[in-house]
Amino acid sequence: MTAMGVLLVYAGALTALAGLVAILKPLRFLRIRTRRAGGLVLAMGLGVGLVGAALPARVQRSPGSLLIDRFMPEYHFNEVHSIRIQAPPDTIFRSIRAVTPAEVRWLRTLYWIRSLPARIGGTTSRTSPEPEPILDPEPDSGTVILGEEPGRELLFGLIGQFSKLAGGARPRIEGPQQFLAFHHPDQIKATMGFWLRDEGGGWWRLTTETRVLALDPSTRRKFSAYWRVIYPGSSLLRRTFLAAVKRRAEAAS
Image 1 (cartoon, rainbow, N blue to C red):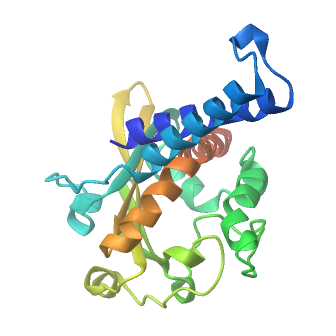
Image 2: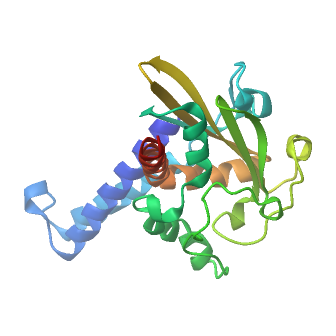
Image 3: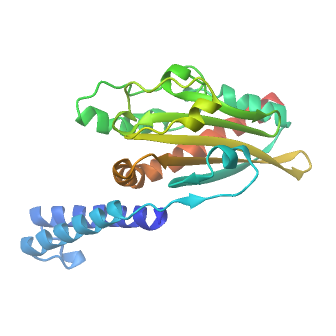
């Protein structure tokens, strides 16, 4: 459902853009020959995009044995990415926790885009990442390490109010049990896990998965639209983060 929603949102946006341009100047090569036709294309694009944003997000379940399955067996949204790295497992996990924003391509641009909802809403927010490591747990900001198996697996958790995801205060989370017990409306719970698979010859497959659970129906509907709009940037961010981990780990080894 996520893929279909993202496809409809961006197909609608491109169609609406073509219609808007055609209102200013008909696009004969697209067979939009009149401004009236451009208006119809604009309306159609907006409709398709709204349908994509409004598609319901169903609960997904994972009965696996990883840490992420124990702490978030049910979720509404997720994405998975992986990369091959030739370095010892302990070096890879040290690199995960040491990568800084300067090492991740496009990070500052993507942070700025992600902050737009808060900026438009008049909320004061941080528009660029701090120079410290990206995955630095901050209990006061709702971020905590939920579990770790050295050299094998690492799991982070985050709790945040949907309307303040791009900036603003988050509840303090002391540890894994508080994360599990947290169930407040207008909030989301997210986990970001990392784990390794031995591929032989000194090569390891590092996989990361992000899962998000919306804690009430209203938040789920709002976050569905938000997730489908930011998904391409979110995917790019995770891929470039993994590439930074690979560079750091292989250089260290």
